[in-house]
Amino acid sequence: MLRRQFIRNTALTSALLAMGSKDLLAFFQQQPAWKIKMLTEEVGVFTERGGTILFTVTKDGIVVVDAQFPEQSQHLIDELKKKESPFKLLINTHHHGDHTAGNISFKGIVPHVLAHANSLTNQQAEAARQKAEDKQLYPDMTYTDTWCESFGKEKICMHYFGAGHTNGDSVVHLQHANIAHMGDLFFNRRHPFVDRSAGANMKSWIKVLDKTRKKLDKKRFMYSVTQVMGMISLEHMRTFQNLPNIFQRFSTSLKKK
Ligand SMILES: [Zn+2]
Image (cartoon, rainbow, N blue to C red):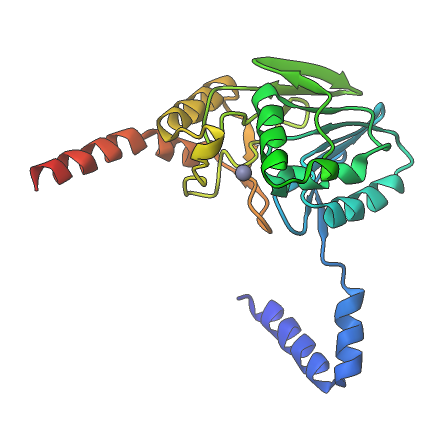
């Protein structure tokens, strides 16, 4: 920890300790649980509870990628409404609840919701399983291979490279900003949760990362983990390319025993 930061933290801790329990409660209630960090002039990330949300405020309107949970997406909507720009599109990277449960807060606000066709099928199946159909806002637009559209100077492309974390994961690429949201396809130096009930496939996941690297070479990547946000370098992606060899060596050594 830097000395100056340590002194600041110590001073804050002392100030908090000096407060009564009522004051302390009021202090924490004033602190919003969510964070918005702008990555460029037009592109930002929202974190609170659930998969990191990416958004862009263009001169043609607002596009949001993923929705966390209803309460969380409402916090984001309240903030973005201050921009006085129309909501144009909500994108889901995949169907999991920590990315789509908040879709419902966008009902009547955003004209379209977009996801991969398999993501819609998975969301419908999961909602039926949980008897939560009335809590969903499903995508009204789907794609299967690639989808692109321009919003102001931003061009947003969705790419499907095969099964990975589920069988409906999209790589959402903001070409102008040079940022890609990979949903749960990519965690910070660890493999994602393997959702076999939704068609996850780890062998195919390696290929998905490889295709992503080839297609979006030299681009920055955003990984989506609760409370973690940032860009990850291409070099970290490359380390995953060695995984098939590591798996191979591991299984061969097991067979020998
Ligand atoms: Zn997921």
